[in-house]
Amino acid sequence: MIRRWILVASTLLILAGCATGSEPAGTGGAPGAGGAPGTAGAPGTGGTAAGCATDIGVGEVQPFAMPTPTRTEGITFDAAGRLFVSALADDPDDDQLLEVMLDGTHEVAAEAESILGIASHPTGIIAAGIRTGDILRIDPDTGDSEVIVNVGDEPNFVVITPWDTILVSDDGEDEGVGRETIREVTFDGDVSVWVEGVPTPNGMVFSLDGRTLYVAATFGVDRGLWRVPVSEDGLASVPEKWTDLGGLPTPDGVAIDSEGNVYVAANIAGQIAQVAPDGSFTVIAEGVETVASLAFGRGERDPCSIYATNLFGDAPPQLWRVGIGIPGPEQ
Image (cartoon, rainbow, N blue to C red; front, side, top):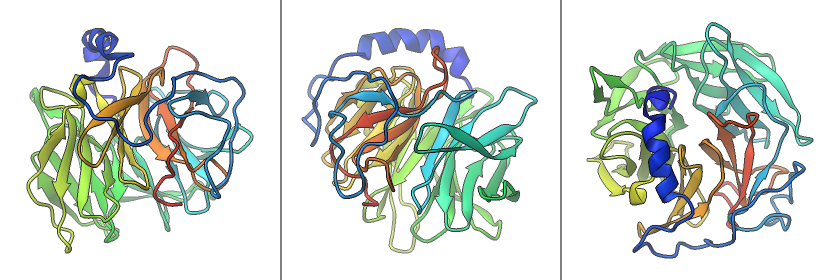
């Protein structure tokens, strides 16, 4: 998401102003939508996995942790409910993997030359190094990292497949033409093209049954939410554009809830769209400044809230919590 952001920011801010505060015409009412967006003061964790927290309304936006020293992009919970975000340093300093504690503070878990999109795996945190081309495995307990493989170009987002490999997106471009390839990486370091045809692919999430991959296409006339059918053997079929999200600018991170609704971060607009299983959508939250990646709460954090990173906010880099009212899929 870093690439081209500054170059298109001025134009897209104008578009964002048109989109902000309105529900696109003709969209259906997605389950769980409603509630006035807003902000709250002190960070909080809310309830537990036993049910939705009561300290946040649907669509309400709260800061949930102390501001981070730099902007953030990737976000993931591990199986134990620990929360990690990637903090992006300016060249030539190292990027950091931060663990965000329940009291709102954070600790540096690891450093590497480049860490952007992240995903949790039983063997560690998997990270995409957009500046290096590396796919990393990081041990957050020791800070050690290893390069699984260098895929070249500018890997952005990673997701673990149901068959235990890694899919890697890249929303960059070659000679002015956006890339359209999602690669597959094994934990032995083998790399192959998994699918082509999704323009400037970014955030990715699997459907609840693992038979569809949803992909945010960030730039260009075909931006929006795409879907890729997946066979029982993990093979991709022909991608199709599912919704243009009413023209919302710069779709970025994605998440899915336990009812199959897909959530898309509209980075420049500072909005989160909720896409129902029938493809209708609504803007469920506003004021989520330069929202990047999304993850439903786990462990002691509210399972019915989305936790989100802030890529280029004007305010101190802030982590956001957004009330959804529907649990995430891990609960």
